Amino acid sequence: MVRITGRRWMIVTRILKHCLFVVAAIIVAAPAAAEVKITFHSREFGATFPHAFVSLKGRLDATGEVIDTGYGFTAKTISPAILMGSVGGQLQVETRSYIENSQRHFTITVDDEGYRTLMAVVDKWRNAKQPSYNLNRANCVHFVGEMAQAAGLNVTFDPKLMKKPRSFLVSVKAANEARVEPALGLDGTQAAAP
Image (cartoon, rainbow, N blue to C red; front, side):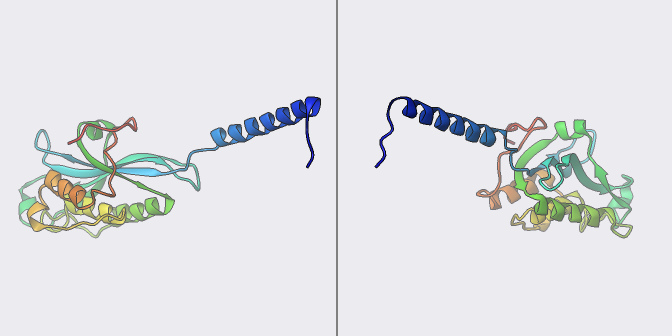
């Protein structure tokens, strides 16, 4: 066994301190794992009819692309024709103020593959054959339900809830309590509970 004393001990401890400092600096400087958070929102009656939609916020690991958007599905024109059957539908990008003034229900974190799966659902609804909006079969609640399924959640499309965005999202949250995270506000912090 080699015994290190005196000056040699001081040199060895300095080297160890420098090594520890370098390792700590590397750990602190390493970028955080990229992820995208999808938050599920609803709006009740007011200036608009009830609506459900999602917002996505984060960064992709593969490209570093920053994601900050929201999607909802709605009729192109709001008219009594909605009550009669299928009408023209559109996927819309929700505005920041619209998102801010909504009720946030819960958030799910997805990786790059999960984000691509979500975007495939967005593309499916964006490119649906017209007329694509149907109050009973293809409305904003159906869209949000498919987004929740794509994020890996258990979703029951209960006919009694398919015209009730808030009630539908409350039921999805209850069925997935162990998987969902608290809803995030636009600044990335936890939002007030619904």
